[in-house]
Length: 153
Length: 187
Image 1 (cartoon, rainbow over the protein chains, first blue to last red):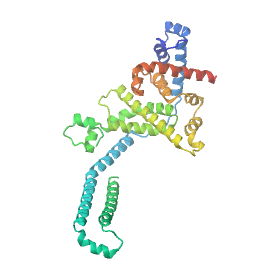
Image 2 (image 1 turned 180 degrees about the vertical axis):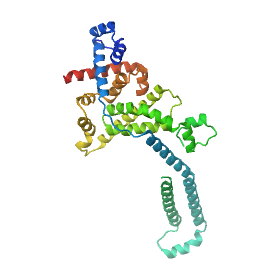
Image 3 (image 1 turned 45 degrees about the vertical axis):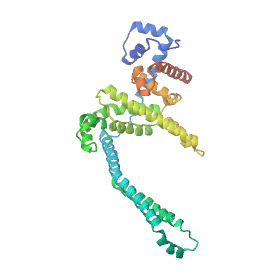
């Protein structure tokens, strides 16, 4: 038997698929183990393909509609993107401004903070405010994102 | 909008990329329907045979056409479109197998049903032929199908399976030999 694919193999397989009788080829098949094997496998494969179950597939219209729907959703998300970026930028700006203001007018706040808690260190106040702002930002972003997702879906 | 971006860029430079109308103009529904009618059934047979699951084939064929719509070929040549669709589908099948393997690797408490899902489906619905075929590797199944059912040339198979034309000759020979041995063993 041939160790590699025989040069006649293609013609042999074609013979099988087109049911063409060719004496020269028939003679070759008798002599060539590789071609016999190819013929056998090709025959088996074609029987196997013919036995494939018939199953109802979705219509082309459905696939088309689904593709458009996916695109509309993606377009909606892309359209909402600048809004989310603007929201984020605004909230970051507010936070930075708040921290800066707190630092600048710390002396005015300090008596209030001292009254609020004796053990509360003044240096922690800006960080606390920043933390509260950050939490607020996260909530706002999450809420905004959820709302835009709802609209696009 | 990414659908038909390539067409939009070339054919409709002044049309807004994000309009659904532009999508319809790039490829109309009727054209797609024609392609789908011609290609869907053979593609489904191919995927169901190499993946070994009809349910999986349904999903993969659908995803294949969705991806085709997202970035269709410029050529309207049937052979090119077919080859393109087969390539997408084959990659999706491979991705599925890779994902399943990864999940099974990390799954500590996997049930027997989960592991033998594909085998169960194929055994229940079909004959010894399917069982024999599934003793081959996915790549071998794809090779044999493309060569002996679709009648593809080596270079066409290479394009679909992302392999070199030279290696197809050897791989196909090995796959054929293996199937022949399995068929001998069945007797």
